[in-house]
Amino acid sequence: MSDIIGIRNLETDPHALRGRYQWGGKTVKREDGHYMYVGMGNSYMGSCTQNLAMSAPVGHVIALIAQTDDSSFAKSQIWYADELLAMQDGDVYIKAARIKEPNRIHEMTISQCSSGVTILGTALYTPEDWEHIYTLYQRGALPYPWFAGDGTSV
Image (cartoon, rainbow, N blue to C red; front, side, top):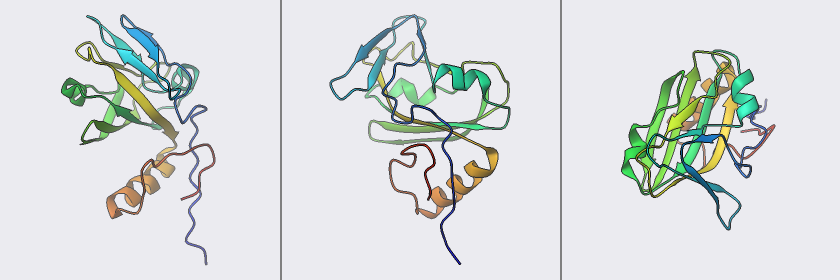
C-alpha cells in the first residue's frame, strides 16, 4: 500500500511568474522573474491568476506565499473568502482562504505596503485536496514551498 496522496494544484501559474491583477498601485518585475506589487493609497493585488479566480467554485481554497518587510500585510485577507490559514515566518507570509463568493477576483488590500509585496507562489485546491494539504502541514510533513506546480503528489 502506497503512502502517496495525489494532490493537484489547479493554479496555472503556481510560481507566480506572470503578473497578477493590481489596482491603484505599481507593479515591478524583479530580476528573479517574480512581480512586486507596491501599494500607493487605495491599492489591491490579485491573490491568484485572474481568470482562475473568476471561475473558481465556492468551497475551493486559494493559497499563496508572499514576501514583504511591511508588517501591515499581516492584516490583509483574501476578499470574498473565509480565512483558513495566516502565518508569518520573518518576511514570508502564507495565507489560505476558502472561496465563499464565485465570479470574483479575490484580491487583497496592499494600500499600506509601500515597500511592496512579492507573490512567490500560489495554489488553488479542491476542498478535499486542501484537507490533505492542511493535515500534512499540521503534522510538519510538508516542506516549503508546499505547492510546486500542477499535478503535484505529496
